[in-house]
Each structure stands twice: as C-alpha cells, then as structure tokens.
Image 1 (cartoon, rainbow, N blue to C red):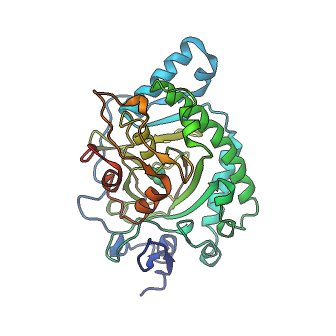
Image 2: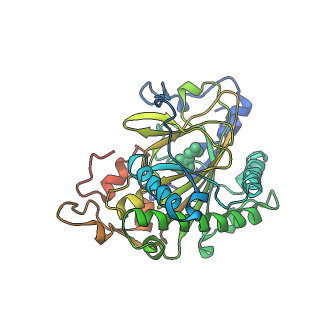
Image 3: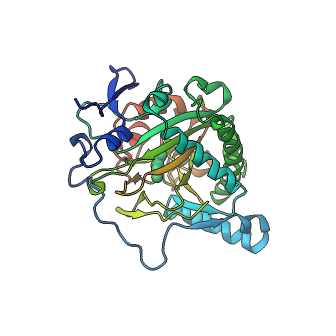
Length: 367
Ligand code: OGA
Ligand code: NI
C-alpha cells in the first residue's frame, strides 16, 4: 500500500473498525492520480448541472427586513415559508454574526487542516467525534474526497475536549464565540419557521430543550479528477436545522431540486440554512429535508463549516400534534434522538433511504 494511504480507525457501531484514508495526504503525495476507491460510477458522478431559469436560485432571506416589523417583516416571513416548502434551503444575509468572527472560524479551520497529519491524528475520530471520515461501513464502499473534523459543541457536558485541536491556540475560543452567535440566529430562525407552520413561536425552542449542536468542518482538497469523484455523498442532514458557512468564492454545494442537481452560489458572509430530518418529522412532512452533496475542484481546496442544530440527545422526536388531522395523517413514528443518530451513523449514506426506513410510516419512497 502506498505510504499516502495512511489509515485511521473509526467507529462503526457494533462492527469491527474500518480503515479510512486521509484525502489531504493522498492529494499531497500523488497530485495527479485518484485511487480507485474514490472513482465513482457513471450514475454517481457530478455530471451536468441544471441551470435554473433566469435569476432563480435558492431564496435569500434578509434579516434586516425581519427586524423592521410591519410589511417588510410579513413579506420576509412569507419568503421563509416558501423557501421551506419549495426548497428546504435558503441563504441568510444581514444577520448579526460579525464578519470578522466568520473569517476567524474559517481561519482556525484552515489552520487545523494545514497541520501535519501527526498533529491532526491527535484528534482522530472516537465515538463519532474528531478528525477523519464517517459513514464508512464496508471495505468496498466508494469514499468521499474530503476530510472532516466533527465535534459536539453543546451541551458542554457532551464535549470531548480531548479531541479538540490544541493548535491553533485560539480554536476553542473562536468556536465558543461562533457557537453563541449561531445559537441566537438559530433561535430566531426556528421561531420564524414555527410561525410559518402556525405553531407557537417558541414551539421548537421548547421541544428542542437544551439543544444538541454539532460542528462539522469539511475540508475538500483539490482533486485532479473532480468530474469523477464526490466531496460528500448525497445525504440529508440528521439535524433540526443546519447552518452552513461556505467558502466565499469556491463553489461546491449542490442540492437536489425536483430530481435535478443545482449548485448553490456562494454569497460572501451569508449562511446557508437547510431543513434537517428532525424538522421534517416535527412538521409532519410539511417541510422536507433535501438531499445535497459537495463536489470538488481541480484548482482550489474548499472549507465549509456546518453547525447541526438539534433537539437534546435524549429528546423524543415526533410530528407536532397540531399538524395532524384527517387530511394530514401522521407520517412518522416517534423516536429518541440518540437512537436515531446511532442508526444514521452506522449506515452508508444513500440519500434519504435510511431515514425513511427508520422513521417513516407512510413516507416511504418520498424524496
Ligand atoms: C454537511 C454538508 C456541504 C458542504 O456537512 O452536512 O452538507 O458544502 N456539507 O460542505
Ligand atoms: Ni449536509
């Protein structure tokens, strides 16, 4: 085996640990080749993208309109409802998160991924937190062209600080600051989303309780064959909502819209927000978690930082009773967050299949 294919162990519940590889090392040591494990079949490759007609793209929500009140606020709330119903995704601009903090969190992320492998391995995945690759459940499964650092950032008792990078020295401080800002934005967004569903505005805040928040930093090194690989396989998020900070310039996120892949254009300092599977369940399917994936590029590395904002780990997740009636039968079984996560993490990602198998009643076959 080539020295570039350095291995690390990772958890895959109940099964012997599988070996995964460090993509950044492969890209550094063999910049012209892509090992077979990463080469996708024809159907899985990025392929051609759908161009949306005219200016159509995922909706952009302007938080200043929401703070103004009156007509502008009403109009913006309607936009959120439409975004959740038709896209499952939107971008948020003019939020209160300082741009300098967004720059800082990207900086500490990049600094971490640029460390020597030995240093990064000090944070190697344990109990589905840390540095490496997840969702690898078989020896012959195709792998994603990307490395990640995944950390539970809240509640504090669930943090495994031994897996938090010691370098850069301000990593923890910056993540703490970002976590606070994201929480306040997420609370605002969830109360607006609740309003669009005619639920009490604190419905989600109340049912999420002491929220569980996980941060996932994704690092996609440049790839000599971007047309043949995926940075991140198609999936829907196992979260309430996800707030993603993507690179200001390098495009890479695609969402599945009406069965076609569409690219999300980066807007500098915007956050990409998407409905996660828990919100799909809680809204009894009114809002859906949409499949998305990441692709790579030949020239540029890309960093993205996702915060998965979810109900607490022992919360029971079920459709809101207010959203069930004769015309809207209950679509999902109730389940405990932690049980779901163990199921989710021990399956290969195949779009939303595992999600519906786990919790769907009549939702099977939905996309
Ligand atoms: C994720 C995700 C997309 C991206 O981390 O769940 O969908 O652009 N990331 O990196
Ligand atoms: Ni995702």
